Image (cartoon, rainbow, N blue to C red; front, side, top):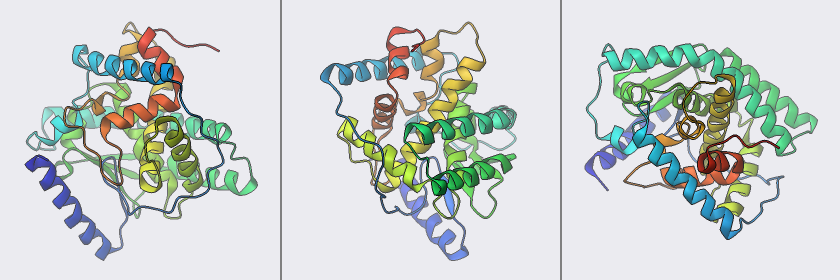
Amino acid sequence: MTSNRILAKLSSVLLALVIAGSGVTFASAQRRRAPKPTPQASHASEPMSPEARQLVERAIDVACRERRRDPKGSVPIDEMQGRPSLPVRSAEAITGSERAQRLLPVAKDLVIESLNWLATEYRFSSRSSRLKLQQAIQRVRRVRRIRPDMDSRDNASVLMRNPVTITFGTIFLAGLPSDEAMISVLGHELVHIADGDHDALLALYGAVGKRASGLTGLDIRAQRAEELTCDLVGALAARKFVTATPDYDPLARRVSRAVAHNCVAEDEGDEDHLSPRDTIRALLSLNPALTQELVYGREERE
């Protein structure tokens, strides 16, 4: 483990202690709350065939290769961690902050659409489930501000006492130069906000985690399931954005931008997070259409 990662973990622990004393809840793309209990999931998990697993691995290779070729390719998160802090008024941070603020209304709409789709896909149709989903969607609609922060470095976060603002580390803002990548990360944070203080999306996290565990053989429960669901919604939102904003870039390149910040050399996870490459593996396993689009470079149609 590098000294940067050790310092990051120590900083996370100290920050958690300070926040616990102030009664504030912290949500981050890298670090969040204490693990939650895993509910009974309602969606069956299916094993993947060897051929499907091989296709996922090919898709991971394509996504990471496209990142290296892409003028708008994201900086992998392990590289972000090693970079010096950027002032809020630096040109890169300003550009990233303006991009995030411009895309926030679009991301909110796409996240709401994706949450509704997942509720149908995972069969959350009870009155209680639909009520919790509508409450979650209302929290998403109220988010209105991006706040750049030098001290947050390569993280994004929300304070549950101020759930209308997403705070982005300036390194993170600078490391996501494409609209697709920014939509993906905004989607992740918006799902944390949607969940709120009372775990409105806990059942969905459990269902996604159970299905992903069955497909990949990875242990995806509790906080890992929450983080993966946030990433899944972010990837779905980014993919919907690609459809809504056609351009001349190859489809595989645009799709890759939703996950390419996970194309790390130092692939480490922890008990609350899958490793970055396992995150890509789980996301592609959950969404075979993305796998097909990355490998074959064409849109999959039913």
